[in-house]
Length: 88
Image (cartoon, rainbow, N blue to C red; front, side, top):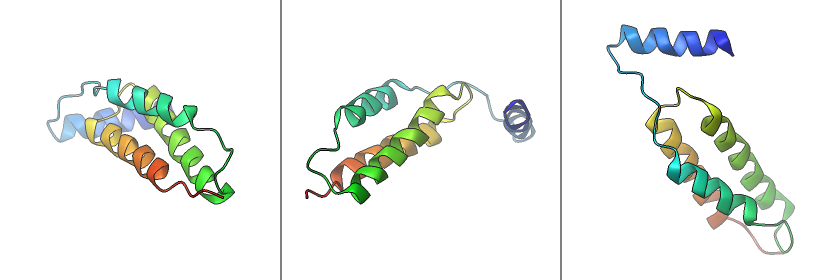
């Protein structure tokens, strides 16, 4: 992980980007809402898709150097997974 972070930092410096931590308030709220959805009443496939989106979002949430576009993509993935939950 350290090598990955170093690579992201170097890439940002090479491209003249300012490395700032993105705003994760919306992401954290979306993760909480996603976690609140229980498996009862939904197909396994659609619920697994939500769990995958949540797992990826948690990774982005913990990434100190996550860019805003990555954060926004994680939020969108959770919203999409929730919307696409299929009832049994």
